[in-house]
Length: 348
Image (cartoon, rainbow, N blue to C red; front, side, top):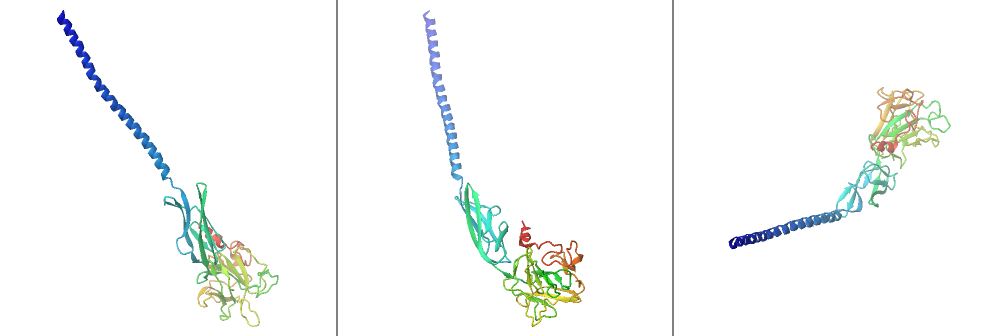
């Protein structure tokens, strides 16, 4: 009985000790789990906070708009003023807004923006381009100074579009209320250059009076792209008007009797000579004075078909849509000359 009791007591003690030895291993595992969890949580929280902080710090703000020329700002009417518009940010970065910034000229009679990034000169003068851009409820602006000088007319800039040599026509071509075969003669000249040209000192020379130009254009006579000017033999042209056209009376040094334009109905040659006195800008021969390709016409004018850009001169009455015997200051069908807005605006 004693032996059995002792054995039973030893067995219980062994079991109790075994249980106590297992507990430290369990206690050791739990702190590792807590540490990992805490570390992961802390790391995630810190990373999220850092990411938010970095994002806020990296957002750049606009500070300045800059319009700058891509070349010279002192140009002639044969040039264009190329420019760019950029928005500068406080981190030094830039965004190009040339295509969509608002850009205007302080004097659109001198220079106008028809195409983004290009200033088109129209006349002599100076001014500023003003660029503006709005972002984040703030408007940024900058200016660019420019100056334009006139370029003289030279070979190929002009074309003789219409000539009325036989002015014994119905109506009153120069509009002064008086029918006169000399004064009602006219020559219509169009600018086919892609630029404004200065006609100051340009002469209109008739074949039979080479040393007495039929007309000398006055100082300050300017013809913009797409415009025309009509020179009459005489009379008063103040009643005439139209879009993109001007009218003048022949200014010459005829001694005694004024010959006007002195055009010969059967055939003649007219030449536009540049202000240098030697350069031929353009010329036209018709009837007996030419090679037969341009007819001599009675009781009507000869005109380019199509107007301005054609290569054949015909009887005004034979052109489709013609308004009659002649059309000084308009196209054959009565439409106005296109002018610079139509010429340059077509590029948009």
